[in-house]
Length: 341
Ligand code: PHE
Image 1 (cartoon, rainbow, N blue to C red):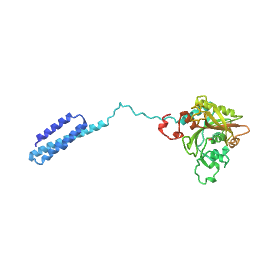
Image 2 (cartoon, rainbow, N blue to C red):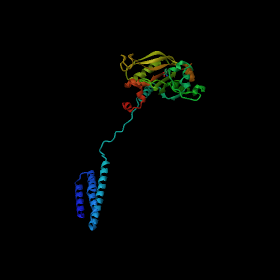
Image 3 (tube, protein in one colour):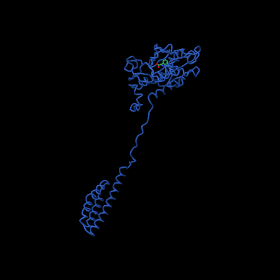
Image 4 (cartoon, rainbow, N blue to C red):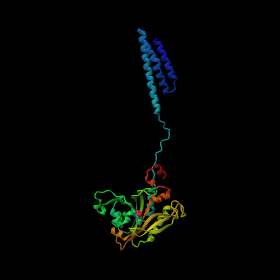
């Protein structure tokens, strides 16, 4: 072995390197030369002597340094290739949010009632027993309180508290009637859009929370005919269709007389289908003439004023209008559902 042979290895190495096509191929060549060719040169060194040993050693060291440098260069260009960015590729689509189907329906309700001069007001979701029950003519131990299974707030020594301090999640939006009448003089026309809570066993049409539209109109000589015309106008606008409305007698402690309002089924046009349970009608509203005791609780002069009130279940209407088969979808937060609106 002499330095001339080392030079030959160097020439072969450079030639191979020149012929290579990619940084990773160049990296492989460098590796092979260090592991095979160079290491055999270093192995021979111990058998060489004197001047020749020094020359071969020097040449081999220089070659090793050169191969290492080439290897480093190939590695670097390989990495930059991996990080290479194609600016012509189309970007990632941002995903846009939508308006929840219930929020959309609420907006529509506000628009329709605004046409009839109703303003939209709010009340607290966590109520007290007085506004939710007592002020609405529910007597303290009357079983009618069980009509609306209530979610009570845990409180220390609850039994000893006054009705106004006993907290619960409101079971309906009717307490806002009283809250509003306490602070505002009739004549008045309001709607309340809000979430209500019940201690229910859930299924496809019941959930522990849902949404109501409450309406209240108080003035001088208000009649059932006024109510009928307001609610008919609302449904005709909402369904942009020739829906029919019918009133049936019912009972609520806070209205007298009370009604259930049915709307002709928009799916089957009164022929009978699974949505209306073959009746041709959808039960969506509880209503009536405001009970004088309720007006009195709110400090309204019952000699002069009377009125009507109604409560609409919005989830059911949204379900019928959008053909949604489970109420739970509204509250699931599932994007696959929400993205459809
Ligand atoms: N608050 C009643 C309910 O939730 C509905 C209703 C409102 C009935 C107003 C009459 C008048 O069932």
